[in-house]
Image (cartoon, rainbow, N blue to C red; front, side):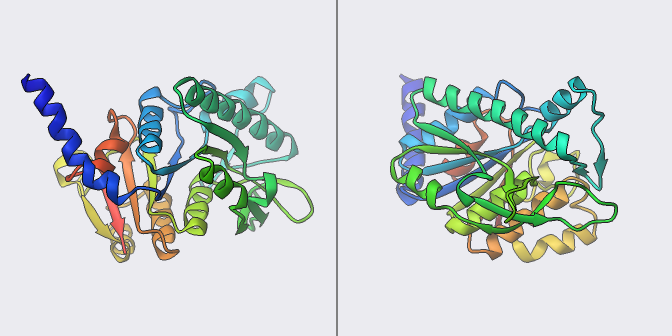
Length: 284
């Protein structure tokens, strides 16, 4: 009986959030080592499915870097990174496309098996992500910088209660395919849709004053705080582009951005549907 009462208390705590976020768009980006050819961990997909059944409108943007590197090595190509970005020649871009399509198909398949409606697509389709070649020294090859985002198809899917599952490629005006940073794609889509929330699932608990002490977690930050924390090197290394993509989303009209640890069981639900949350939220 006590266990049943405890469960009912959890549901009651979630109720105002379910009401508040009903029909609201949430863009969820997930990449890193936990995304492989099998897709995304089941507990994360369960959270996304719960959000969908609770009346929210989740969109999933995924990467798949380690699997891409594995597929490149199988083809006899050694992965090369410059400034944290993958050097992408013509052969590599086709391997990236193939690898991400395999991951995408498996995520969609798993969501459907769980009872959700889902549809997979890439940023190169339907003019979703338009890009130009990213200028850099040295040259990165077919790495794109976003010039425009067309969410027409994404909106149609959400209107039909279908979860869009998107992988980060773009196309230029000549029809060339480009590799695009997944954080940039997710932030761009969230901005174009004026999403309620932009969520980055990563491998750390959020932004912390001391990376080794969870008690120093920043539960809430203003977008204007981020540059100061970068200067102080509290935000550094791989967290810098993630934090900056959150700031871009907030400045673009997204209500809140969140950085969460995907390794924490049901982190999405705990962050969105509870009073305290479990990660760092970034607000205007």
